[in-house]
Amino acid sequence: MNTTKKRVILVEADLNAQLQFKAQFAKSEVEVTAFTSGMGAIQYIKQNGIPELLVLEEAAKPLGAVQTLNYLKDQIGFSAPVIVVANHIHSGLDKLRVQKIITRPYRNADIQFIKELLMLDAIIKNPSSQAYNLDYLMELADGDDTFIQESLKIFLTSVPAQVHALVESFEENRLEAVCQYAHAIKPSYEMLQSKRAANLCDTIAHYAQPQELPSLVKALKKEHETIEYALLQDFPELLNGKKCNN
Image (cartoon, rainbow, N blue to C red; front, side):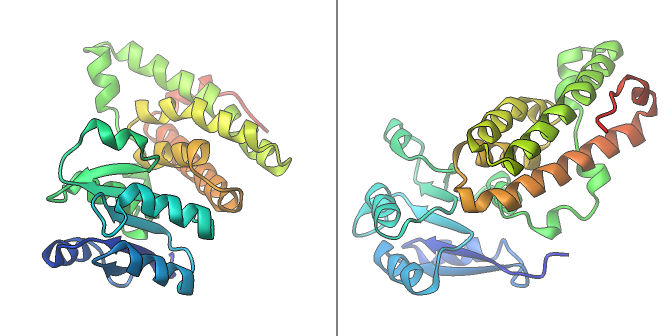
């Protein structure tokens, strides 16, 4: 079990919205420190270090989300994932290179995304049953069981080798290759609706700083092994089509 609390900084002018956000997380797992302005958050980060996640209101006073993030990155090398809270989605948000843009009121799907991003123990109590979901494949297959079987075989014969290559590239400090492999295998996890694995790939490929890669690569390897084990438990007939990587 993960006994270390995840630190989240929330910049939200609405006090009721602050309370609503805090109520979504177990205090034993997440420590949410809230501010009504970006300046308060900046000073806190300078004094206490970079948190696991910054949740930032688009209209955060006095600088707004874009300038606040630019300041944090330029002045203190801020590298944590960022989620921006907007009143509505619009084209002006495209300039924000962040993990996700969400709107109020907070949706269950958005809170779940945050929990997966933080890798909370509470969301992975039963890894085997939650490792993958075939709904998307079943929709594509339109009743064709052979299509599903072949898709799963392709996953098991191609993705493990790519994960192995990703880990090997990391161990050899070939970070560009690590990012390329993560980007390449993300759609395979999306096919199985494994949000955690897909999010890890996305973070590794596009957002992670070098010092964050050890834990992210380790987490992706473990998550892949969980998915692979669950598939072979549920579909033992696929074992014949799986290539050995040892």
